Amino acid sequence: MNFSETGVPDKPLTTLHDFNHAVVSCQACPRLVAWREKVAREKVRRFQHEEYWGKPVPSFGPLAARLLVVGLAPAAHGANRTGRMFTGDRSGEWLYRALYRARFASQEQSVGRGDGLTLRDCRITAVAHCAPPANKLTREEIQACSRFFRDEIAMLKKLRVVVALGRLAFQVVDRTLRLPDAKGGEFHHGATYELRNGVLLIASYHPSQQNTFTGKLTEEMLDDIFRSVRRHLEA
Image (cartoon, rainbow, N blue to C red; front, side, top):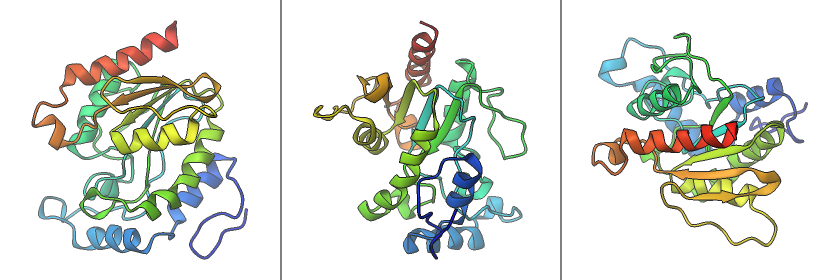
């Protein structure tokens, strides 16, 4: 596999080794590179004695998974610090508790890469693999990372359900897997659509503090999403 100077491969990625290498090596978006590295250098007081990951964060979970969870991007002091998707921040605490209760995770805590947490029949990825300033991605950055998402989808041979956390993740999944000539789906919590190859797309509010602190998303609402996934997979 050959890579450009920005770390972007010159042909589709078909193995987990090549995929992870390409993701972690990527330098395609100068704004994101500068931000993730700045955060990793300057840190915040509560994590000042920790070594930050400070690179693009690879997806987490087995390629044989039937469930794919798609978030927005690594949090600056969450996954950008720990190096594992949805690990080390409040959003991850909510997500992994829900996955544990639905039997997709081995434990409900997500502290760091070495905490022993494993995923069962579930994989977690994001629209972008780098932490963005103010949690906002540009159109160009979304486009640059979309090739990783397309390659990852192609490698998930047993995929049956995608849970999109938030409107942007929903739009990216819908656009990538939409049936030919189908109208794009409308985002609302619990919305369900059938996409290509019989893959089911389920929309959920993102477990961000903005949503969880205000009660827009409750733990029961998030549990309902993954209970729906479990029922679909076991039907």
